Length: 214
Image 1 (cartoon, rainbow, N blue to C red):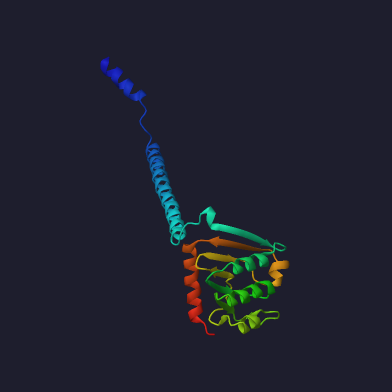
Image 2 (tube, rainbow, N blue to C red; image 1 turned 90 degrees about the horizontal axis):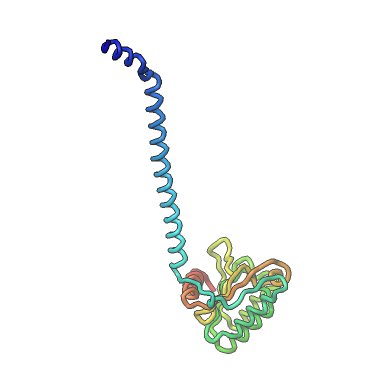
């Protein structure tokens, strides 16, 4: 009787189907693969985020950090009198004004530079080759006043709109020194007081100046 009972119990326990075993194994492998893949993806994403953060920090810190107090002024055109603001800062120069400019037809800024030259300020200008002799250009007036001017022939465009004043003030932005920029176009201008940033801009100016001819 005991043997019959044991035999009956073994018959009740249904063995695992040969088809079920591989299916379970496949599900296990799939779950493992998803887990590993997710972990690797998360690690790579975190790594890329860290790399992006480090790259941005290096880019910003390669010169200096701009502090709120470094920003002296902003100006927006049209009708923001950006020409008057540039002339104002030119009039405050004590030693040097170095300029990289694309278009320059504004009399107010031209007159301010002539006055600066008469005060003994070191005024130097590098001009885009396609605009120095444009209609209404201030070139001839400035040249006649004794200001040192060079024309950039080495690149497609000299598209800078920059003035470095006294080695610590930078005037820059999209604002060309032209009537159209002052009265018609949407432009921006910033004035920054930072010796570190001015040094970087001055280095750029010197590279362009030395690569051009009078």
